Length: 497
Image (cartoon, rainbow, N blue to C red; front, side):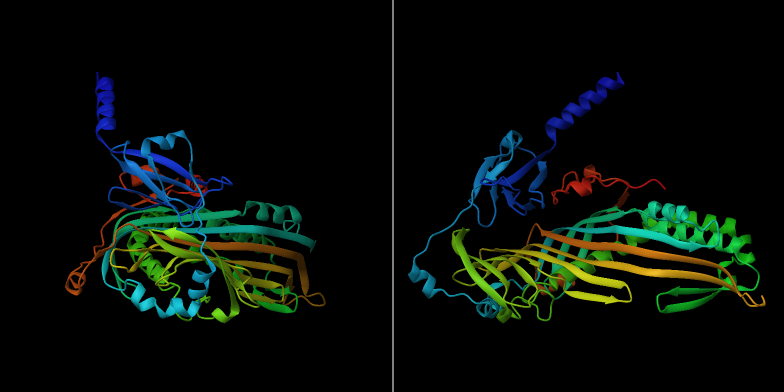
């Protein structure tokens, strides 16, 4: 009887509640995914495809409703939502052929775009519904320790191989937040509604655990009154043997420390929840501070336009207005290449895509290297009925490589041994390379004006629905439209502790 009741409830729920649909948008010619295409229906705003061209709608009550799918440079199409199950949506590229008179009368420069910033973009106070995702991707590309010589039997190549093989090669974490944003490019108040945290602390503890193993081996083999001379190339330091030994008081508190660790783990979620709002607010403010017209920012195509070559690659129609398709690349020693779509009349920017063509910074000394080798971004704006451009999507991806290639020698010496102070020696070669990339994505779903009084009266709320997951849980966002997670996020699973 209970089973029948559950089935009845399930069927009635399926019929009366909103449905989730999924789709994918591809280029008609080459079948490549089209990222950041816009899907609208009714009053819905802000639904876009992810970097794999996929999207989902979690709150669709009528499968017969018509979806409008558009992307800059492509022809807009209308399609019934129920037809998405038949296969991917294919968009055809759109271009406009204009005569030479038009080209000669409308010559575009970076300076003209900047000069129209104040009149083109919405700097008024507004209330925006937003979705924010932060992805942190850390990869150990190489970790090798080669033992050249060791007089301590336990410190051998087999141990070093076990150390390098035990280190987690991939450490990913993701944070997703949905909320209301009040303010403009200069000041903001944020109230979160929901947030999800996919974070694996276990992958960060492996190096600490392995370091402890090596220290234990040194402690068991060290002689009384010994000290260690550690050399890496021309750099050396001295470590007293007592520094490797545990304080007896610490040993006596071991059980209390274990209990404390368990309590701290329980507090971890509460602490991360408490700090999440502040960090999200800071990340969003940082994104807005990187809009293309800001001075002294890393993306300097407009500030240093004389270092770039601009080429009109074509024209397209955007919401009934003609826009340049403008490619840019370095003339010489500049950093970025990309594409932008610019209104031919008011010089408003609809979209900018850019990526670095070389490392922005490099450092190498004594076998230690570091390079800021990733800096990509996307900015998408939409022109409203008043003629002002509003931000609808921002993405920034920044990353670096870090490496160490050095010899390392550890020599045990004894202060009171006559004639032969050297007791043991370990000679190694270390090669370590790691890449770290952070990606920030911000989608704006709504944009409603507020006045100064309304902004001042906004109370920032600390409570919101926050959960930490061991694997991606799409049910958490049921009823809300977000950026569809890519394959890597969907595959996230917390490692066993």
